[in-house]
Length: 325
Image (cartoon, rainbow, N blue to C red; front, side, top):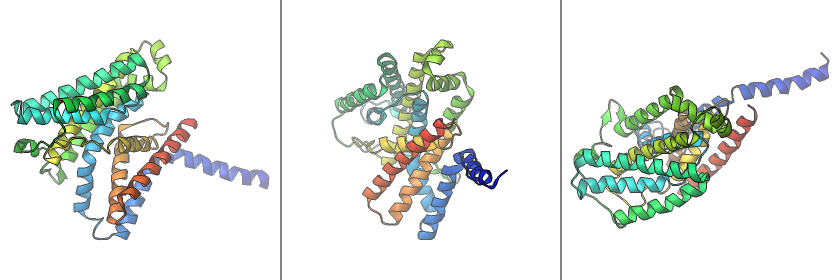
């Protein structure tokens, strides 16, 4: 081999190694972020109290992004789920405070509402094809529905047994993160090891090929949005319990972070696919980053701008990963 060929071979080999281990980029950046903030704010960032706070704050986002991952994996988008969260929240709270359904009955009703409305959105998306337009329209409808059920006012004086859902711990872990972990693990197992999970990945990979292979693509898309509705219901219960009340538009600010973390998770897949594990790591990374910035006394607008740039970086990284497959 000539010297010129050897020189050209070095960067090629280096590039191959980078592509081979690129899926480890997000975990490594996560670890580096933790180390940097621990050095910048020793005694504040690197405490169990701060870790616990990050886990509690991450719990609703972990639940939501788990459902969103399934929708994205099937090749669709959902811009309505934060508005649906308001509907499910007000149904759950009114069930306990005005409709005399008790805590268990109210939670069952809220879960059913989330599942049914999620499936309705999925059916409309399957019929009308454009998930962006359809879910945007449903978002407006859900906002109106929440106002129709209950006017824009705060509901307080909730049962203690409901507040206990987000209180206390299971061992060293806060109860909300345990709920989120159980939900995410359950959906991940379904996504990875069941026929539905395989069909979701097939439809998301190539809808036409999946249809020709005998997969009912409409049913799969409805199922994906139903899972999103279930995630919204669980997240609504956790959020309302954490807030100790119903606040109108309490889901404001959850839409962008959910997409940021889902697309961040793509970087952990060798083939550029959406995965529950990747999305979970994305949520924990983004919330850790935001907590560190706030501990450094950075204003909220800085946190928002950083989150937006993280999303752009994740989109670029995910597209590059897919192009290399």
